[in-house]
Each structure stands twice: as C-alpha cells, then as structure tokens.
Amino acid sequence: MPVPVPRQRAVPAVECGRPETEATAEAPETGAAALAPGTEETPDMPDTPGSLTATTAPAASGTPETVGTTGDAGVVSTPENAGADGPLGADGPLGVAGASAALVAPQLTLLLIQDDPSATPLVPDLRDSAGQPIRVRAARNLTEAERLLTDDVHCILLDLALPAPGCGPDGAHGNEDELDVLRHVLRLAPRHAVLALTASGDADRAAEAVRVGAQDYLFRDELDGRLLSRAIRYAVERKRSDAAERRLAEGRLRAQENARLERGLLPTPLLDGASLRFAARYRPGRSRALLGGDFYDVVRTPDGIVHAMIGDVCGHGPDEAALGVELRIAWRALTLAGLCGDDLLRTLQEVLEHERDGEEMFATLCTVDIDADGTRARLCLAGHPAPLVVRDGRAELLPYTENGPAIGMLPWESWPRMEVELGAEWSLLLYTDGLIEGRVDDGRGERLGQDGMVGMVRRLWGEGVRGERLLRSAVREVREMNGGELADDVAVLLLER
Image (cartoon, rainbow, N blue to C red; front, side, top):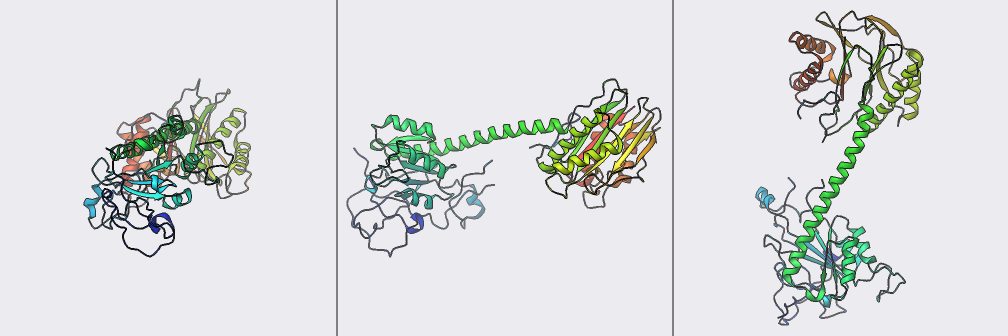
C-alpha cells in the first residue's frame, strides 16, 4: 500500500528568502495523511492556488540543542608539547532548559532542493535514531537553497533533475555534464552531507553521483519514510567520518612538514673525533606547537676546534621558526667554510635581513669556539645571555660585559670576542632567555633571572645531577616555578669535558 504524502505548504519567507506574505486561511482537508510532527500548513504563492510545498516549521524557541563542550621525559632534541572541526551546527539558541539541554543531541535538519513541489518525496514521520522529528526545509532552486543553507542544516536532498546553473527550464544549455547541479551544490556546501535523488531507471547516473561526492543516492519511486530517515542518518554520519578521515590525513601531512622543519631546527651535532659530550633540550612556547624561534648547532672543523652556537629569533611563531632554521643552516655552512668572528656574524646579519618578513625581526646569538685541547675558548655574544660554566663544582656565568647588539637590529660591523679559560674538566651550558624569563612562586613572583638559574644549577649539581638529567631537571623546575608552560621558547645546550 503506498505511503500517503503529506499536504504541502509554501516555504516560509524566513527560510526561503522570499518576501513575507500576509498569512491566509488554512487549506481545506483533502484526506491526506497527517503531516510529520512539527510541520504546519500554509498556502503557496497567491498566483498558484492549491499548490503546496512540504516543509517543517521552525523549532520552538525552547528547543534544546547540543553545546560543544605533558610530561617532560624525552630524548635529547625532541619537542615535547606537540599536539577538528567541532560538532555540526546546533539548531538555534539554547532554550530555557539550561545546562541539561546541552546533553540532548541536536535535531537533524534536511534541506530539500527540488523544483517540482508536486513530486516531492517527503513522507510523514521522518525521525532520527533517537526518535526526534527531522526538520525539513524546501528550496525550488539553487538561489533559494543558498539562502536556506545555514549551519544547522545537516543533510541536503538534491533532485538531480534540477536544471544546472545557467540552464533553461528544460535543462537545455549545451552542457553535457548531467551532474553539474550536484557539483555546484558540493561546492556550495562542502561540509554538508548530500543525498542524490533520481528515478529508478537512472541507476548509472545515481552511482556516478556518489563517485562525484554525494554520500548516497535514492530512487524517487521507491522512497518511504523509513528509508529516507535511515538514509539521512547514514549520510550525516558518513560525512562526519569522511571529515574526520580528511582531518587525520591533513594532520599527518602537517606532522611530516613539521618533522622536516624539525630536522632543520634540531640538528645532529657533527662532533666526530671530539672528546666532548653533548646534550640538548628544546621546548617551543606556543601551545601545541612543535617548533619555535630558538635554534642551536655544534660542529667540529678539521683543525679540531669545536664550534657551538645558540640563537633566538624574536618571537615564537612559524615565521620565526623558519628564519631560525635558515640562520642555523647558514651558520653551519659558513663555519665549515672557515668563517668566524665578525666575518661570520656580518654574513649572518645579511642573511637575516634578506630573509626576514619585517624590519622589526632580529635574532640574538651566542657562539663559542673551543680549542682542540678543550682548555680554552673564544666567546662572542650578540645580544644574548652569557653561558654558564661549572668548574670544580662551582656554577658561574662566563663574562658578559662585552656584549654586542643582536644581529639585524643595527647596522653593526664588529662584535667583541672574549678569551675564556675553561680548565681540564668543565660543563658548559648555553641557553636561550626562555629559561630565565619564567617567573617563580607559581608564576606570581619575579622572574627567575640569571642569578636564579645559577643557583638552581648549583643545587642540582650538588645533588649529583649530570648530563641530560641536568637539562631535564632544570627545564622541569623552571616550568614548575612558573606554574605551568613557559611563555617563550626554551633551548638548552650542554657540552662537557
């Protein structure tokens, strides 16, 4: 027995975008079955008396809706705080039900796009999996559909017989693509589920519609309420699944890009033949970021000298991270080519000035060149805090009175180089200012500063903490004193003899 078709009404002006017309008397009963829950009847446009379109009345104002509601261990040079479209749009403002309404799933809304209202496939009692009525909006053409396509629409039921954009009423336009109207809707609603509606003799066309991008297809002459309700729910869930898979794939691509950038920012030290031990730690300051504007590197040249460098591009975003990678690679290439001192820093400044996005970007830099016998070094500071050295159990800062400006800040030509006695056994700690700018007393006190860092390292050293453990403990304690993640990037480099 055929399923009765509900009486139809005109799309309200607030839904279809047409000018509001004065309400008229209800059409007389025709013996058709009752409308789906939540629907109402209003006459269609005045020039077509008796012609009605099925839709569902907007939900009442009180209808509930759903309201969208690391450790420090790791390998030496690994970022530690690396990290979806939200739920589909709800159906309106939160009603007086309050917080309890937030636990109720949003009411599904269907947008029907069909130019022949008399051939509408809608049937009574469309309900979702929870038994809640499915709201329906109707559009006669793509212009009306675009006006009705709000965030609370979950699924679109598109009649493939609808003329494509630019076609005449009979569909004639010289366009051979039968699915042009579908492609137009997919471009119009990339985040919505789409069901294709066609005649049962058009199975090939229906299957092609799914290949083009529709979630499923339905035959007009086989449609009933149960089938349509199930198809709507399936299409919505499949669209959500497709969106989740797409986000996952995009996340993997971003991770691959970040890994490539990470390899440039966190290099493998070139210390073959050196008698020094190396360790490093790195933490970006941005939430869920993998990389920041800090950079470092260590290489040993054929003459036996070990060159160490640590730097900090002002800021801690992706542009700063990219510039840090460029400076790090440039430093390694120039160092291996034999440049040092002023020649090296002037060239790095030229690289920075050509590669930076704005004139306000600059970078601080600390370079240390350790002699082949490991007992002496030359220190150069370009706006960077002085390294810390531990000798004979005493932790202290290296001289920092002769400190030149950061590269890229001023048109500078010469930076002082200081001779430093290291001794037979020592541990040299190079760091960026993110380590000393954190606050104490759970972030409520003054900044830790260099003196506070020296005291912390001296205490940890006295407790027998060495090597990587020293770096891990120092970074962890600084975070704990700050009461959480630090605002700036942190890079720490340790060389020991």
